[in-house]
Structures are given as structure tokens and as C-alpha cells.
Image (cartoon, rainbow, N blue to C red):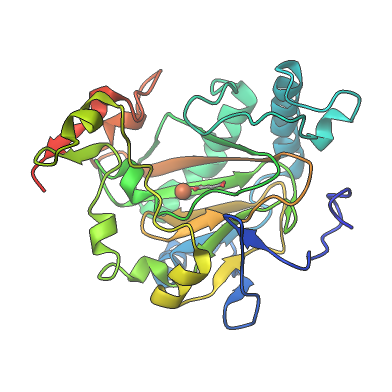
Length: 311
Ligand SMILES: O=C(O)CCC(=O)C(=O)O
Ligand SMILES: [Fe+2]
């Protein structure tokens, strides 16, 4: 089956999120709607408003993304993360996770990567889409997901909401990602559940309540809330409604753009290979920016960024 052949997209019998099987009936599960990046900004804005995302197939030339993948798999190989003897491009897992987005050892300054995720193609797209001069966050979130659990379900706002909320994520598969390998999944219509999600969306992972007993542990960094909304995709779906949506196969060159309040996570990886992707952020340059993600060496979720408030 496709576990050993990434180019063949055969649906596995079960899909899992955080170790639990998803319900795959038509009313619970489906596929993302594709958009054409050349459509008018008004139409793309309408779709973003309606769906919370834009799934753009073949946004970049495949060869450009392959060159970035090559650079990353070479780094993973040199760092000892890949199975010796297997073709490097297959990115076979060698027993050790690479680490979460923060503290990931891969090179953020790689010119091929920078030219992909911060280059003219994507910046021009956002300038047209947002109707003004655009800036990106400097930090690049690497996802190098080995066999096992995908990313927990969350909204991006709680990690990056200290500037404008007119902010967009672009998720970039660095390799073809079929259902076995486990790509992004989003909960249909969840970006419009602001009332239900208000207690969650009003939080920030680097904030803590000064009037609670454990305030000192949060201030010192001993404790941290990781921003997870739910570890049970089906229970969350039962309360919010909507289908879980993914792609039958994200392909190299695709871009998946979404807003700050769209609930998402990723499918568990049922193969013995790494699933490689990045995610990056874009906004109007004139609007306020979250300082955690800006600069040559962005501070990120460090204790210096902790903010206490009475809650
Ligand atoms: O790739 C993943 O597993 C998660 C991606 C994500 O959370 C994002 O792009 O914001
Ligand atoms: Fe995210």
C-alpha cells in the first residue's frame, strides 16, 4: 500500500488524529475546495470569508519545492535523523523525532527556503489579496513529523495574536503528502464559531493569570499552556459541527492559506517516513505586528515574552 510508495495515493482504512480514529462518513469528513490564485482579490476575499481558507494547487513550480525538500532532507541526513542506506528523498524515519517548531535544528536562513516562503510569488499574492504592502513574520515553523501523532487541534491566534488579527498562515507541503503521511486537516466553518470559541480565542499561550497560585511557575517558564484546543477531533466536531477537511493528497507546489480562527490540526502519520512542511505568516505591513516572531532571531515563546494579567 502507499505506506511504501508516496506517489500512490490510496486511502488507508482509518485516519487518526491524536491517536483517535476520525469518523469518515460524508457528513463528518471531506476534502478541501480548491481555489485559483489568479481569481480576483474580491472573489478570493469572499472565499476566505466563507471558508476560512484558500487551497491553491500548483501555486509554485514543483521543481522549486523539490529543491527546498532536497536541502531539508540533506540536513536531516547530516544530522542523523534518516535511515542510513535508504534514498535521502524518501526521508525514512530513524527512530528519533526532530523536535517541535520551536527549537527545530533545521536552517531557517536557507536561501532556497527563504525564496520559496518569503519570495516574490507569495508576497505578490498577498499584496494583491490584502490590497497593500505586505510583511511576513521572520520565524519559519518547520514540521518534521515522524510516525505517530500529528499536531494537536488549535487555532493559530493563541500563538501570534499580539499584533493584527488580519493575519494569514501559509502551510507548505515539502513533498507529496497523502492520507497515510498525514497532512493538515481543518474543521469546516470553525472560523465562524467565535462565540463558542471565545474563551479559547481570548487566550495567549504566553499569558498567565497573576491572581492564581501557580502564577510564579508560569512567569518563570516552569509551566506553559501549549495552546491545544482539543485532543479529541470527534468530540470537538460534535460540539462545533462541520466536517474535518483535508486533501486526498497535498502535492509539492500547493499552498494552503488560512486565517487565525480556523480550527486545524494534522492527521497522524501512518508511515515510516517524515512528513515535511513549513508554515509561515503574512499581514499588511502598516498593521501592528506580534513582536515574538520578528527579527534575525525572533524571541518566540520565551519567558521574556510572558505577560501576567488578572483573570
Ligand atoms: O503541519 C502541522 O502539523 C500543523 C500546521 C499548523 O498548525 C499550521 O500551519 O498552522
Ligand atoms: Fe497552526
